[in-house]
Length: 65
Image (cartoon, rainbow, N blue to C red; front, side):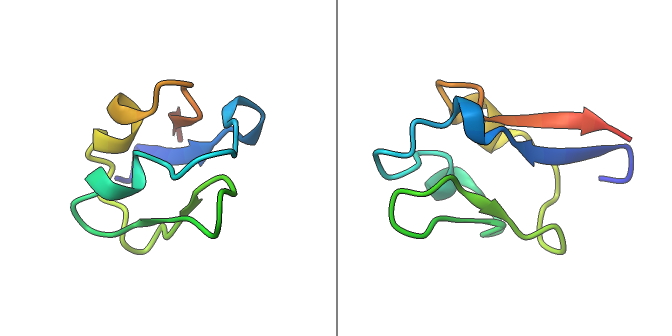
């Protein structure tokens, strides 16, 4: 994970439903309070990309470090 970091682009997230990406994270690094944009626990994130593939609005993207 040292070469990329998961970023939540809140402007792309409709924030009106349960985030489908939260449920596909194999390590529980994503959480969601209500219908807010998801939050990332960077201590848990393994940068697998499951969440970015699942997000239809491209609100979860990787930034190169």
